[in-house]
Image 1 (cartoon, rainbow, N blue to C red):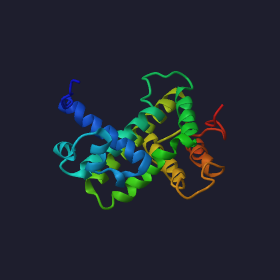
Image 2: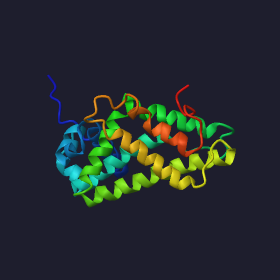
Image 3: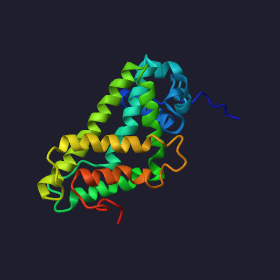
Image 4: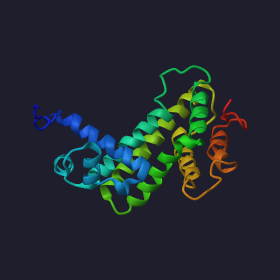
Length: 212
């Protein structure tokens, strides 16, 4: 019987190896919480030695912060893609209608918990706080572009798209803050709060951004 030697370790490019660590950390953060993102845990997830993870992330806080950004950036691109230069009449309305439909669904619960988790930990972890602030700004800029596009197309009536975007973002964030403790957080009026606020903010009739 022929004996088998040790399996050959697969060598990966540094960028690929680092990326898979961040992806694994984002998955753990989403499903279990950012407190569970440790060098040892991510090493176990990937079947590598903790020292290898530590080589790329000497400080676990950097891995936690990048995991948060990876998960929330994917969320933002899924919920509110960059608007085209000319989406046509009603394009901005459709974008916001889709956004509110998705954020009020159960599919959004894990990422809502991640945001709550990150905001709490950011009080004690400066690196994570920087990433949370940057993701907040990205969300506001993305919403602002949609609002500005809608104003230009005549879909919305809004004197200050940037201020409106900030308020809409805060409304979405506030509505999702009950995900851990509010049994009826997806029931009216909580589930409809951000949407109805946005309708008033943008000069739309009640129900204009409701799912069709």
